[in-house]
Amino acid sequence: MTAARTVAPLLEARAVSFHRQDEPVFVPLDFQLHTGELALVEGDNGSGKTTLLRMLAGLLHLGAGELLWRGEALQRDLCAGDILFLGHQLGLKADLSPRENLRVATGLHGTRDGTDIASLLAEIGLRGYEDEPVRRLSAGQKKRAALARLAMLPATLWLLDEPYANLDRAGIALVNDMLERHTGAGGAAMVTSHGMVSFHGGEPRRIRMHG
Image (tube, rainbow, N blue to C red; front, side, top):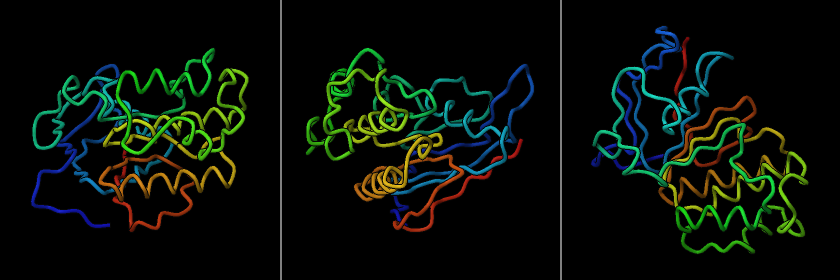
């Protein structure tokens, strides 16, 4: 996978770490991520992979070091909507349908060019479930509804914590296809996963976590 290096990285971490009760969760990290790149965050259980993604998403405070966004100090207010996190909590309103959840999300953050809710839900495997309350969906269907939000919103950076969980083979292939299309269109993604099957866009950047 190639990306131009004449511009500042999309995201850069300099000696970044997170502390819990004054103790570092992981060894300070240095890495860069450019547009068009996929980064695979690797490490043993408990090494801080989820913590790193939550910190990058602004859900946890930076313990030490510096984060840069497009060459400037990362300010959450200025890049709100440009960084999207998907973790074990899917960020869906259980009493709303997939269609209603997408309407709420796009009302807050806008819509990616060339997408519409009905077509996207059908493509992502939720045809016939568009108006079913999320609480009535299976775990796999809920994950697909959350993936639809990824595809619908115009975020540049995806932070995905175990995105293949609760998905069958078709769902896994769907995630891989979404990652390839997103990075191919100039987006970027950071992924934690024990089951990443294939990515045809090139060798992912690898970020190794050490507790």
